[in-house]
Image 1 (cartoon, rainbow, N blue to C red):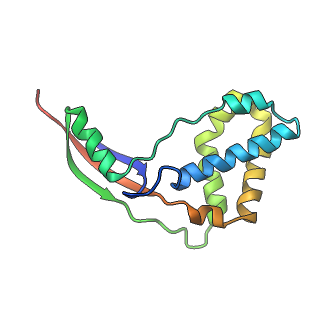
Image 2: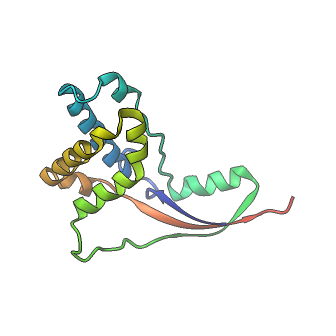
Length: 148
């Protein structure tokens, strides 16, 4: 089985991966919208995204602890540059929207999606260092099922 798994480097706190930093900023945007009365604060409080970015050591321990697979290969994939075809902030917004739009629509309705991601883009453009503070890696993992 071949998997691509977003993660974080060994020794990096869970709060530091770019995904978590991005989710925190989405939460900030939703709270701004709640203060303006666009969405209810109760719905924002009830909106959770259960994501955990593993470190390589944690991934190895999880596979070993499962007992049904052996870890045949694990590599960290290199970061791919966009070479100026699109801004990094726009790329992050597009990826996050693709990942979260369904969840956001289900919780808040589709009428807030454009406004939410416009606000998110604005905040990223005002503070591009937000993305620089986060770390992220993508693992390429090859697992082999153990014979029982």
